[in-house]
Image (cartoon, rainbow, N blue to C red; front, side, top):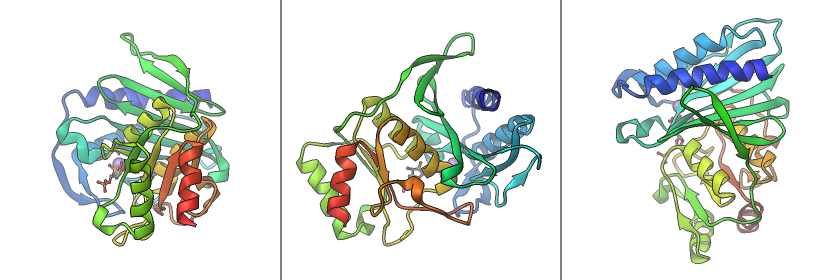
Length: 279
Ligand code: AHG
Ligand code: MN
Ligand code: MN
């Protein structure tokens, strides 16, 4: 696993170099989920594909920017599913964005997740790596990722990070989000899931939600390379997750590699409150 993670670190480092002087324009193409692709979405995907293809432990790659799974080495044991650039709609405004990686053993299934990693390209380059515990790393001047600390969620937070177009929320979601604000929670939402969840993880609590909406009844965020890896990290750090009905996003199973799901990530208090409000 350490060897595989070292290839992920190389790819993240290269993306971070390219982000210093990027081309922020769009391609004419769309990806599987219908998002118009940025030149940088494609470049990040190419960097990751090229770097991870050299890792002998990787059987196949699943990418947000690729229609199909890419087979690399049938004998190898791990499938890496990744979002090469999360929050790419924020590239033009220079907000923090990131890359997300899920490492599945044998086949892509939440119960086969062995590790998850994400990077944050912000004022600093940070990496969260999680096998059994979630660990925060920062890039130093020698281009090494240095361990900063283990990350732990508290029982309750103060942040309400709530996605989806409000006019398309249903009544129970409107009431639940309002109840959190009435209790004193503060709005913190950038539009890059990776940075918004990173904030909750580093502050130790709060809620990130991207609910089912009238225009996206199955949610917007994609299970294999956005939702499962971040759910794995939040739960290993002692937090909770749900799709609004269940007790863990990691119970969900999907066949299509681009499947989406409503999702909620938080500390214990907020997810318990969600389940009371939703069910
Ligand atoms: P991506 O940039 O990989 O397409 O992902 C964007 C996702 C996620 O990062 C974010 O939470 C959400 O889309 C934002 O959607 P809204 O613009 O609808 O808030
Ligand atoms: Mn994304
Ligand atoms: Mn993306």
